[in-house]
Length: 178
Image 1 (cartoon, rainbow, N blue to C red):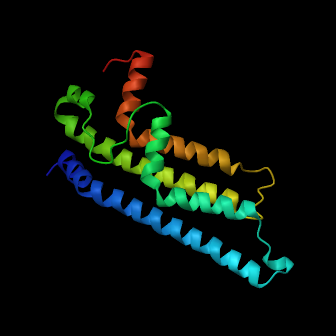
Image 2: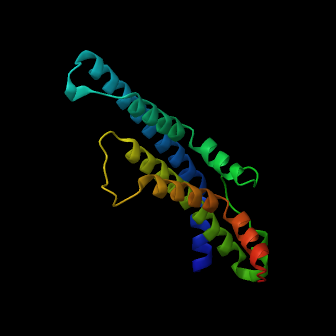
């Protein structure tokens, strides 16, 4: 068995389980964050002292991030649609341009499929950075802009999920031929 065959088998075997794992992790994290906010609200109403103060901004921000995590596939699709590029497919990639590389076409499709899966996880990391930015009391003292990092992770992740369309757009824009 050569390296190309191993890469193709790895890609074919991991595609569906890794996407499903991402959806489950997103749903669990979203429900956990929503439950955490509800517990903070309950605690704040039971003990109305200064130690348990919670603001409406804390609640709304965390609930929005939690809802986005639960609906991760919808948010990835909406982010990609905001670029005017159609719907997202979460499966194995078959890139038309890979046929130009002959025997390496299957390996190129496998690598692009694994990159697409990595894009989904980068998008999820962007949501985690958004959550970290909304946590009450978070202060980076100007050293780190979490919202900007979250947006770049989400945008880059959405582009990686549809990497073949990004490659085609780059080839067309730059006039590349291969």
